[in-house]
Length: 157
Image 1 (cartoon, one colour):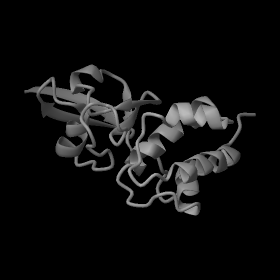
Image 2 (cartoon, helix red, strand yellow):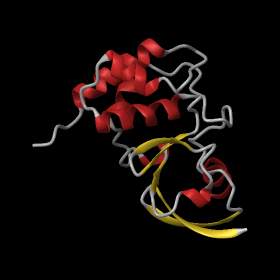
Image 3 (spheres, one colour):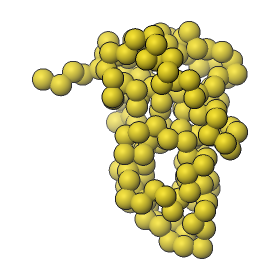
Image 4 (cartoon, one colour):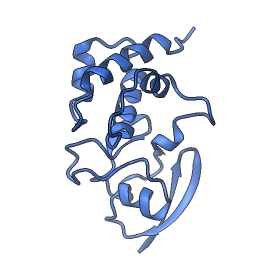
C-alpha cells in the first residue's frame, strides 16, 4: 500500500491504496464517489470516464500511480452546486437517460468534447463518443443533447 494525494473535484484527497489500483476503484472504494461506473474493465465501454486535466480518460485501466499531479474530475465535480453545466442541463431537457448506467461516462466524454470543440459536427460527435456504449441505444438523444449544449456554451470574448 502507498499513500497518494489526488486532486479530485478541486480538493486534495489522500488515499492509501496499492500502486496498481485502478483510479476507478480508488474513486469508488477509497473516496466514495460512485458516479464513475464499472462496465467492462477494459476501457471499451466508457462507463468509467472521468476527466484528467480536462481530457476524457477511462479510469478502469489507469492505475492510481499514473495520475500524478493531474486534476481528476468526476461527474460529481461537474456541476457548481445546484447549477448544472450546459451538457447536464441538455441531458435533463432532452430526457437522454433511459436506464442511466452509462450516462455519467457519456456526459464526461461530451463535456470534454465541447471543451475542445465548442461547435462539433455530427461526425465530430460520433468520433468523440464512439468509445461510450449505451445498451439502451439513446445515441440519437445523446447527439441532440450535445448539439443543444453546444448552443448554450459560453463563448470566450
